[in-house]
Image 1 (tube, rainbow, N blue to C red):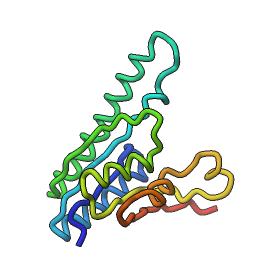
Image 2: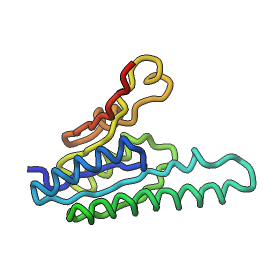
Image 3: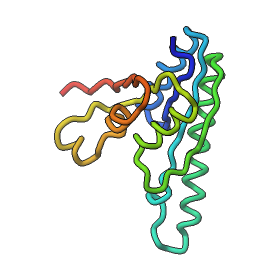
Image 4: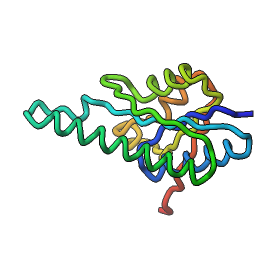
Length: 148
């Protein structure tokens, strides 16, 4: 059913769980995945003369995240490609929605922390943005919460 699965990755445990779920689905359906890492340049520019070095470091880190995700896909025998997207001033949900349209994805698989209350208000929810803006179905893979 789902042959083209888009997976935003950031190297976190949460996005890794989403990637594992996406790879399993792709393997079962004979599908493929596209891995996307968003680089928001504005988050790395400080106004100091070293900002170009910070941006290069952020690009290098994003490339490593994508390489690690590609290695997981290869290990799972799932065809995959990747894109490092510079998204200055764009929200994650907008970027993922555009990538899903451009690549003609059938599904987006995204990790979520399942934050509630004040932590969600303060930290925001990239997964919620993706759910609201994606032009295709979204599978949100939640990280298990620690017992209180």
